[in-house]
Length: 451
Ligand SMILES: Nc1ncnc2c1ncn2[C@@H]1O[C@H](COP(=O)(O)OP(=O)(O)OP(=O)(O)O)[C@@H](O)[C@H]1O
Image 1 (spheres, rainbow, N blue to C red):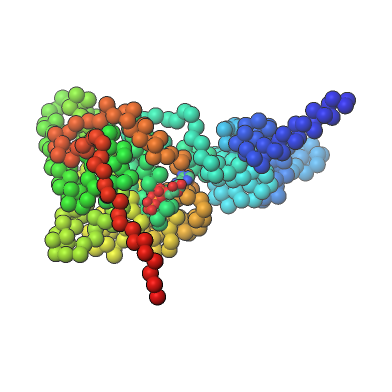
Image 2: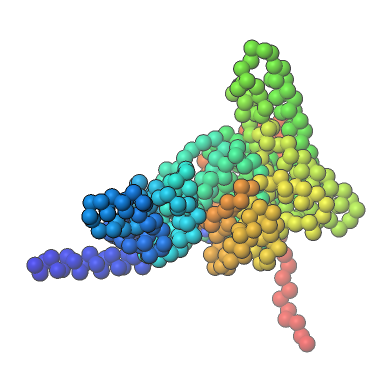
């Protein structure tokens, strides 16, 4: 008996320590069992307290009266499946007549408190079936991506969502995207994760990094072309437009359709071309886009117009030619001049890190998901890397990318350097590899100013 008591105390103490210090371990060891028991035991009463039960139907009342039995109780949605996961529980519910998915969504915060879970989100699976995803701890506090993720061409597992699922950047579903965020909000880390995720794939990476190349040039071995100033960027974008036109010619040549070609084989983009003819897809990463749109002189204005026109053309026509845009910046609104809002409208995927004002959040979500604007401005300053990711369907999620250091990203790019495609049209922009020339440190004034 004494040994049993000691064992109980040890288990309770270990569980308590793990719960506060290592929530992920706690969940995997004790938390999941406690949570399953808690949900199953409390399910009926919690659903009743949250107003998610329906009164007995007429035939059940009649049956009870005929059989002289007590009046049947109200019934909650039926549990179809309860599945523990790495980060929480997934509960699939069959709704009762008269209930809808909105009832469950509206009660998700009450369910979270009642089941003592960290977060609860719901989504409709099909008519009458709703899935509740519960997380046992804050999965975004220290992001750990699952060891296994769904793999598909041009689909990068880039971050974790607050419900514990993986957030993918799927270039074939959403060809172009915009990532906004104030300084030090985590844009570069997000972009680094994208590059590291794309590095093992058959894709050409093109970078325009107007921060003098500090973010993308260390990853140069996996890049087919890089530009670190607006002049080179203008030429590089012209070369990409020329490449896009060549790919269109190739698709048109393939489309010389005869009556015996099945409909499914008619090419309307590079992915429909036979594999031996298919040009390699290109992802164009632009860091600090505002640098491309700002100008001080007449010549710079001409260059700016050339750049924005080329970007807008790539955004409008690039998808079929396998050219995808990934644009990052602190702000991307009409104050950057003509053509910007037209370009922004083509960037379907939107991600906003912490922003300093509502108008910056509006640039990302104002035209697609107004409630995401509120979520974006509520991101706390100490949660760097936390972001709101939405798309044109109006849906949005809170996400956070894993903290990939520059060293880790460089290692990944170097490991996959042999996959870097050589495109003739991009050859002049291929980064030269080697030891950089030493640069003199800027002079520092050491004499203190006297009043
Ligand atoms: N997902 C993350 N998880 C943990 N820490 C992060 C994450 N993303 C960013 N950080 C932290 O925030 C710091 C700033 O991130 P980052 O350089 O990506 O910001 P930024 O938005 O690109 O800033 P700037 O516009 O000034 O370049 C990083 O050094 C890192 O310590």
